[in-house]
Amino acid sequence: MSHPVTPWYKQFWPWFLMGLLMLSISVSSTFAFLAIRSADGMVQEDYYEHGRAINMVLAKQERAASLGLTARLRLDPLTSDVVLDLEGAEDFPAALDLELIFPTQDDRDIELTLEHVRNGRYLGQAPDNLRYRWYLQLQPRGDAPEWRLVGEARFPDEGEIPLTPGRAAASSDS
Image 1 (cartoon, rainbow, N blue to C red):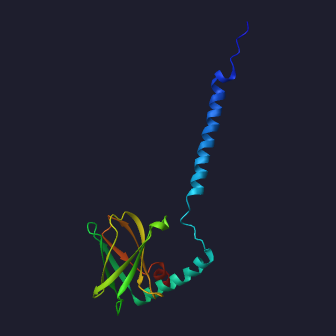
Image 2: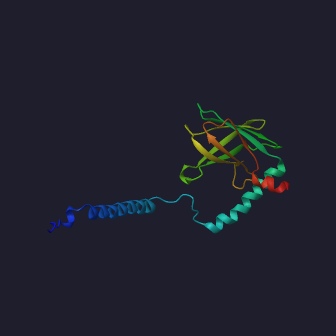
Image 3: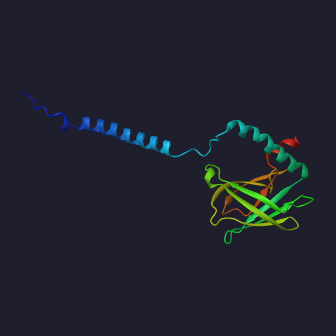
């Protein structure tokens, strides 16, 4: 009583094992292609210079804290008008730079110029349909701004967004 031996290619297990092998090869090839093709936007090219710049940023935030500067920002979701009220300044700069920084993709960062209208009120125009979470940095327009305010916003749901000197102010109080 001998059982007929079926060829290997008619059995289930060899095909199952080869299928797993082919699946793992195709998935790893896809991930390798994506890793090579897309750049990591969070990695700084010049670590040393970036590290030295952190001290300059903290000095700007400490300067804003010593001046008692704060700001409130509003973005109209229909017209994309930006209205900013700066408080605590003795003299108001003619223009401010507002940088909207996307947390994970540096190519989505946006720089806006806000023009002084009167008594610390600044106006500007943002791109349409701002969405998601953004970090905000506000400083006077110029080559060497002397102070910086920071904040965080989630568009379009956020109402009034406070901008403060940031962590540097908290550390100087203690």
